[in-house]
Image 1 (spheres, rainbow, N blue to C red):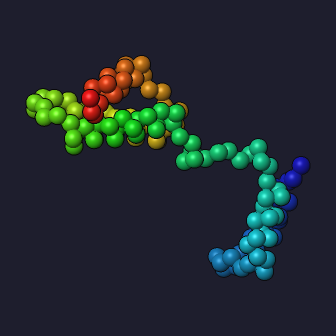
Image 2 (image 1 turned 90 degrees about the horizontal axis):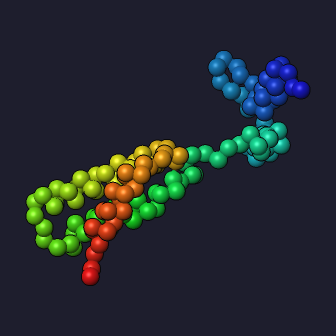
Image 3 (image 1 turned 135 degrees about the horizontal axis):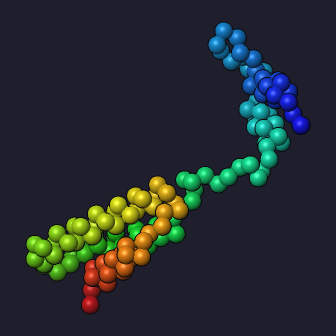
Length: 127
């Protein structure tokens, strides 16, 4: 088991020495430093960062958002209330996309899923 003093000594050797607040390099190249760190690193300790994970519904939400936006551009002429409902649907999908991008484990409720399915059927383009 490595003690605290041994770990500090090893890190000081890797990073160089600190003199007057400035790090003075140990004369080793970055690749050597990275190789040393990789040798001492346990792969099980490294977790996949959240920015690489995606929510399981993120692609579907993106497609729905694009579908509503396209309907807004080329859809049929509608009344003012239908237009407001479309804007609200667009905002709801955008909010859900933001929630899912912040928390990849966010659980979309059954009520929201039913509403999203309704929007998908409502805002179809074409025949």
